[in-house]
Length: 231
Image (cartoon, one colour):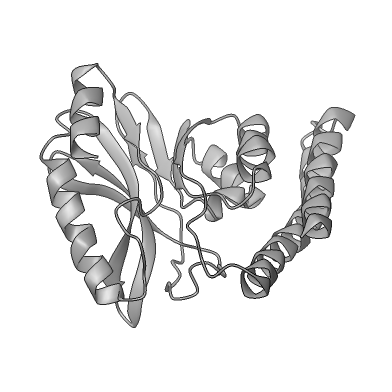
């Protein structure tokens, strides 16, 4: 990763996004994961120059540890955003309680974990705050998360989204993993259905309600239904 960031910076990249927890094979030992995270942050900060690097790490915090999306500069962490929504994959994570953004001069930037980036209200709140670049270090478990989830956030709120992803990290295969994945998707479906009504009302109040937007959002909910049925 250090060599890759160094090469990207040399090629003129202003922002580099790395996959979720790419440097860990397990989070069973959170203290060790936090120490490794600190080492990775130090190593990447040393080579990023004037560029910014987004990744997710395990951070120690009051009461335990948190999955945190961070934006690095040459002096270390410039922006941090803990996981905001409960996640079956990251049930160990403490949750943050607010959205953070950073004006980098060339862009007003936010970072979100892959799971949080799927929640529509966060994209709208960031857009209201003037964010025009959203960086998402992710590890999607299903194709729709990238194909429709992130695409819908960009279409609805208009920030540019830059992400990096690796296939979902292997867990114990079989019924346990499938049940966990199904619960997570059902939870996202419930939020999406609830938010569909909220979006319609909000757009109506702003005289922006169009059939195209609502059909796109309804299609996203339908794809979640299809994914649950496939499981």
